[in-house]
Length: 133
Image 1 (cartoon, rainbow, N blue to C red):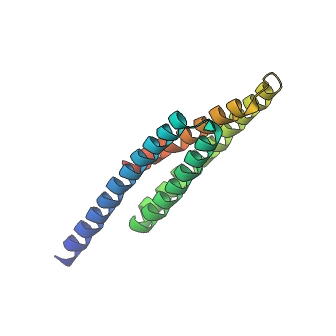
Image 2: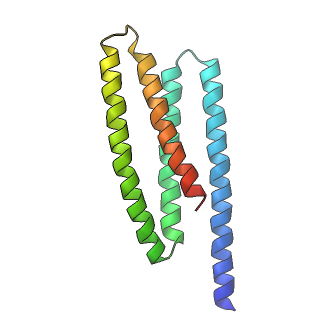
């Protein structure tokens, strides 16, 4: 009976955290869109959004690692390592494209903004996947 109560409480806490994180993700998206629509400094909006998503990803992973059993922790760690490799490869390609574009455009911040936005989207997709665990 105690084990059932413990399992149920862990499930409820994880479910509550997941819902809170989804709400936080939605809120970050809303703030980002508002910043883009109200600002002439779109690159700064994208950088802030990227950093906030990266922080939320880190916090979400920490919570998941602490709430999963050891077998599932190892599985998540392997999945995360594979995702990190894909992320590095994707970000490298984006950075190479931006570097080429800087040579052709006068205003490099537009290219940097788009690059940062693409990187943020990549992180957001990972967060969405993790929050459905």
